[in-house]
Length: 319
Image (cartoon, rainbow, N blue to C red; front, side, top):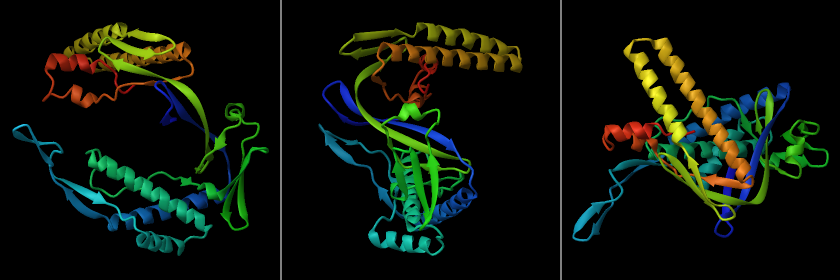
């Protein structure tokens, strides 16, 4: 996983690299900790949800030229999560009543609950989530950095469970040890059978911007120049399998149709993986920035004609 932090000039960025590796572990205390954490997390989400205030955002109309233009669309219902100090204190006090672990675990629960609610809120405002309270369906516990003591010399992490009770996780002699040499340890995620440890590092790296077209990818990198990638073999492959699938459907042969679907998916994936490998070899210390295309709009029946829709559908935007 990679995240951009800030721009350093025209074509370079300081990039924060994050690599996450898991260390298997067996300890009965972990299962009890996760059970307590998930239960408290759902309680926190329930309390935040019950105190949400719902407002409205109305269409914004501006004057352009001699007419009026609506620029924000229809009226929408907006959730506003409670975040004042009084509410946070009452939430913390409620969770502390049933907390058998160190108090910092309650702070970790509250922060995770707000993160989940904010993620739901953003998705809801974009129309990608319904007006339904989030439910915790996976067992995990996110550990705050204040609960961790990291020893980089012995390559181990000591997690505080209760005052005077600790859990030790070493990563010395693991298969990924050499990959994260001199990297910083982030907040770990605890699961029933393993500990997921994120390692962070920052470095200067070049950026290549790509223009996505139907038959090509066109990029530019200052030290290389313009880069042209021919996508016609990919489009030809998609056309061939479109005909094969249509022929199988016409004959009512479902097994043959599913065979062609799987074969097409595998060959498209193979093409993209080989293309990615070539781009990495061409510029190993670079990140590649592509257009944020919305394929839903590109294949919409209301906006795009049928012939154009079929051509847009052949481009694997999400791969």
